[in-house]
Length: 60
Image (cartoon, rainbow, N blue to C red; front, side, top):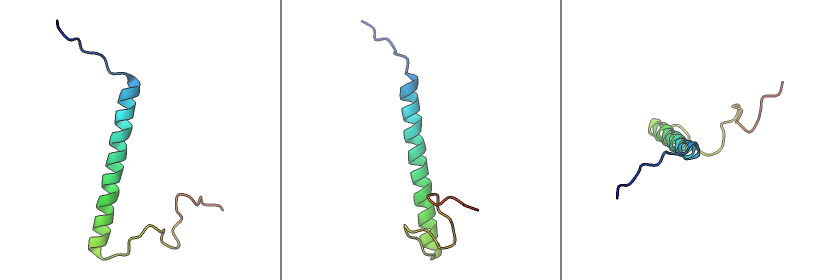
């Protein structure tokens, strides 16, 4: 009895790609935080005053 290879579904490939992108973004964020801490700059969860966050759209 031989086993046959089954083709991957597009949904599975999309899920795997989404997970990989999420891991990459998390790794980049951690590296940025580590570099900021090493530089001695303030790094916290709160946004820096004067810089609009993603939650606050520019309204002009």
